[in-house]
Image 1 (tube, one colour):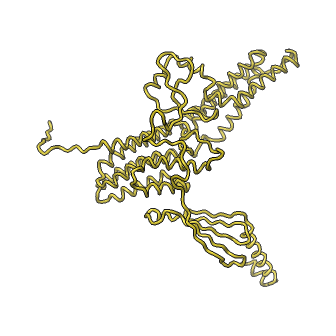
Image 2: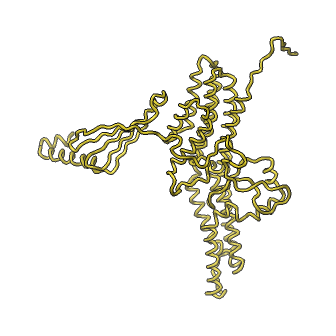
Length: 493
């Protein structure tokens, strides 16, 4: 304001020039921007580069969709001329992602599963009784490439027997080149150590003739090796703590879902409310799995596959196929579409399921005793706590400064290892000794890196399927035990 007053007092013409320049800049900013977007929960504003500004307003109409009055979004296009006048307004219905838009390729419906069709892509088979030194010995998920970690399924008595077999060490040595740590470290870590070992050997023996060789003091290097081993061990220990914590979270979710299913059958008398709550109990672990893992545990799915739809659409098709396994009887279709919209819009589907559970409990007022409703609400609080703790692990890695520092130290140590081993092992022993030492220590650190993201290793799909089956068992097997009219209840003091 003081600047404007000064312009008016001393030189009004300058004020006119400033205003004209501002108007020109404002017009250019709106017409020459390539794309300027403003996103909110209910609208999207897009300004495109052209002589005529085209304004697109997309409205999700989420409230109307919940009431069943409107399932699709509306796209309103307003064309503004150069003088600022509105030339045309058009409204185009926009269909949200629906079933059938993209065919799911990985998910197998539960009713179609059997010996020939399985949702799990396995790598290995249960070994027969007796000593088995080679071949595939355990049932685990197939690895997509050499960079993928080892992913075990839930253990059974048979797999526990193989796991504890006295021949396990021989079997593990035979399969060493198939192991995840070896394949992940082969290139570039072990390849770099091997290159330095070979180069050092050739230089010392060919150019120096074995006299005045290049090397390091092995005893001094041994102290650094001890510190490096402790560093790698600490990384593995901290990562295993995260792995164990996430397994506890899934155990809490499993116990809570079972309690909620049992309490729902005990206390909810209205059949619609009861069936809706049971379906939501099945949907929560499914949505939670998709929330903490981008591929929904379809580990063999690749992001970039030529000739196929974009990754986001293929992922959503798999999600809808799994959700349809729950809503497969034509009931509560509004819940199915509601979760569809939240997922496709990038929303928080586990939170939406908890909200729908709360709505069901709130709607049971008058049919469920308030004490029982509070008990169910406490179970929902347990789910929310486990789900929030899982988000904490997912979004917060180990301190990245520590990870980077330990990675640098391990790189320096492993690539200096041939220099320390050459004076002791000579030209023939340096290469194998360096590779063995680097593989042993770097493998510990690499296992820690794999376990740092537990949701990429845990068999979460089996956990989710187990809760789905538990709800069906509780629903189908629940019977109220009533004492007959002529029965007498007696007690002894």
